Amino acid sequence: MAKATATTLAQAQHLGNQWIQNMALESFLVHARNVRDFFATAGSNDDVLATDFLSAPPTVRMPLLRSAAIRRRLNRRIAHLSFSRSRLKREWNVRRLLNEIDSAMSTFVARLRKASPKLASIVDAA
Image (cartoon, rainbow, N blue to C red; front, side):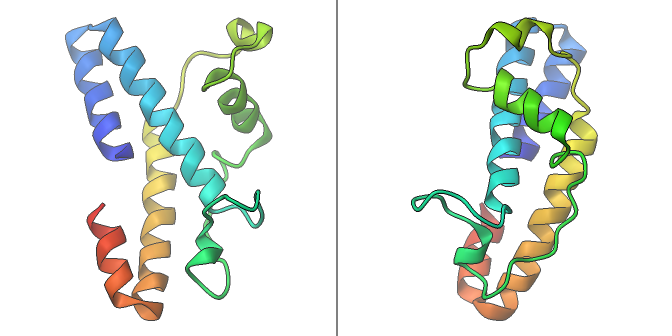
């Protein structure tokens, strides 16, 4: 889904359609936040984490997504009304974020493929 929304964002930027750009960017960032949280080492009791599928958490590098600055921006700009929202930087390095997401998910699926090939094929298809 992150790839699809990034593609839609690029197309909307090319066409100059601000409404579609805003919708695609927000959708992309929601997915980025979900992926970041999925690879967290802990969460709420009801959160789905990578560790729910693997005996040990996969080692994934997401320096941008896990940075304090991006964490703050994602937590303030996405699904959260705040007074500080308008003062936060508006530009996002979508390509770099997408590369981190793709790399993390590829690592996860490769590990999952060894633990549960059937489940890996379902996750990989999504």
